[in-house]
Amino acid sequence: MKAVRLEAVGGITLRDVDMPDIGADELLVRIEACGVCSNLRAIGIHRDGGFAEYLALPQKQAFVLPAGLDPMHGAFCEPLGCCLHGVDLAGIKPGSSVVVLGGGVIGLLTVQLARLAGATTIILSTRQASRRALAEDLGATMTIDPTTADVIDAIAGPVGLVPGGVDVVFECAGVRETVEQSMRLARAGGTVVIVGVTPQGVKAEFEPFDLLFRELKVLGSFLNPYTHRRAAELIASGTIEIDRLISRQVSLEEAPAVIANPPAPGEVKVLVVPRRG
Ligand code: NAP
Image 1: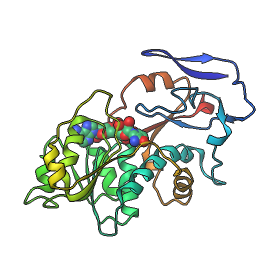
Image 2: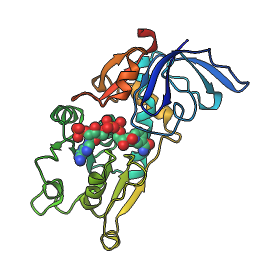
Image 3: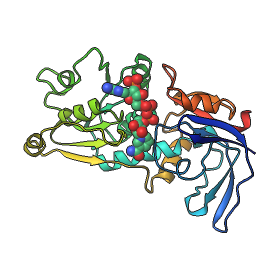
């Protein structure tokens, strides 16, 4: 079968490989679609993943998708499950105000979930205009270009959109700048949920006095514990818009170049579809 292999730093290639050996507690899964993602530790990192025709998968990690669910949509259960976990932790209430920093697939799914959870003010900051426009279609009530606006003043300043700050901030970019912004965008007593993965070793500056004085709750949200079923239901029921997040589908042959290069401007999610090849 064909599989995309990471064999060295920067060495991503398409190979003909043996079919996976299946252990007693494993399943053989034929891959319909696998999303290209930033840098997590999971299946596809420590053991072979979905950039192949077939995958050996521990049974306990397998999930049967609802009947009729488009496999291209099924590939979004994992990222949506991660966003659900973050939204669960955040404790959004009807009428809450929310800021989402970063308009990639994670930020755009979080905007949709925040709307579903009852937030009535949802502000997204991201640099690309096409993503800001998409976010407004998907439920953001306001978007900000962080390259032309002072994000903190524009949102939480005395004459900002939500003077004093918002109830919940989701950091979904994974860069130092947005981590630092997130602490200053939450209101006193507000919640900051760190979803973005900053590279190990990156440090961010904040004043402990500020966290203490304003009683901020700063939470980390990692992966998708026990949220897969709800993610699948939300996608299968059409409650969450997926089609507009799929920028393009590529074959296994095209995958190495897609994985090795940054996304093209305007792209949100690229899916690798083995049977396209
Ligand atoms: P992504 O496509 O790279 O989206 C992040 C986006 O943030 C960037 O594309 C960029 O879009 C925007 N950004 C960068 N700098 C910014 C800034 N200074 N201000 C505002 N926006 C900025 O990645 P993703 O797939 O959506 O994932 C987002 C983050 O979540 C990544 O760090 C990823 O590793 C992480 N993640 C975490 C979990 C978890 O379980 N915690 C799960 C999946 C992913 P523009 O070019 O439009 O600015």
